[in-house]
Amino acid sequence: MKTQPYFEDIRVGEEIPHQVREPLSTRGLVKWAAAVRDFYEVHYDKDFARSIGLRDVIAHGPNKCALLGRLMTEWIGEAGRLHRLSCTHKASNFPGETLVCRGRVKDKYSKDGRHYVECEVWVENQDGVVAAPGAATVSLPSRGVEPLPSARP
Amino acid sequence: MSGALISEQMRAAVGSPLASGQPFAVEKGSIRDLAEAINHLHPLYVDEAYAQSTGHGSVLAPPTYPSYNLALGAPLEVLTFEFPVGSILHGSDDWEFLGNIHAGDILTPRGKLLDLYEKQGKRGGMLFIVSEITYTNQRGEVVAIYRPTEVVIALPTA
Image 1 (cartoon, one colour):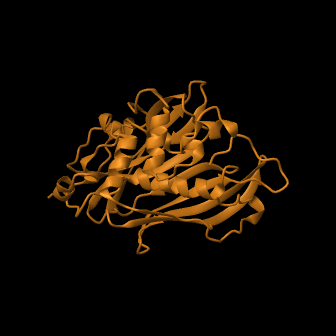
Image 2 (cartoon, each protein chain N blue to C red):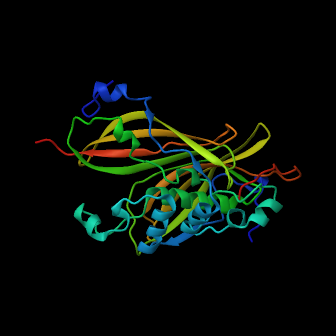
Image 3 (cartoon, rainbow over the protein chains, first blue to last red):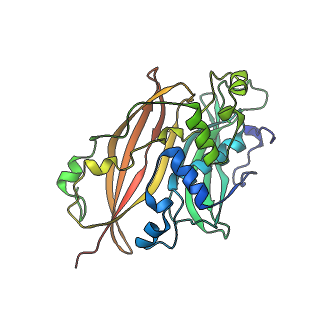
């Protein structure tokens, strides 16, 4: 298991010390489609995808956003909280590609007893082509302070 | 303020309620399905005993769980396009996470059309439709707000 990061450990400008790598497969897209009940054919029917000018089925945008959620929640640990997450879908991703989720610290500040860290986050493919740039706000525990209850993983 | 794609009638629809889904029960099985789909089988999501040992009443849902069974096409029901539609893409996601969601909760989505704007792209006009879906649990607590944007690509007119 990873160690719990604390607010004092965070350095503005540094890339976060965690990444998520997920190879894309049609099978994986179908699992997402079933999990969220999004049955738009462009995500599993190659003939349909080709009929609208794509070379193959494409990954769901909200799936990439959810992977960014996984990136942040895995990094911040059970004593951290994810408050805000956004991303814009700039490029399609196809089976055979690998999605890589990364983040970088933009700012940190304390407010109302919470210790916030703002990050830029993004999903790129295995060649470094950015598909979904975005932003996330988390809060982390502070050393020597009792952790807040009801933490999220 | 209307433009090439946004008519006065469309502009007037901003703020309209959307049919963004019915109240639904948060079930352990659907939490697990989502956790598996993002390959994040954290014990808080899938192990009831572990979740309870850390102060949760039941297993926790991953952050973006509320969009389960979301009607992303809901804004199209309150908009009438006065231009030829080429394709519709999912443009962006924006989430605020305000409270924990556990198995056994009942979530009520309430959607509205939040904003419309347009841009000129390489292939022609693009209409951006921003929705806002507020998720409230059975105790009346707002647990999440989701603002997805759909992008309608207009076909070029000859």
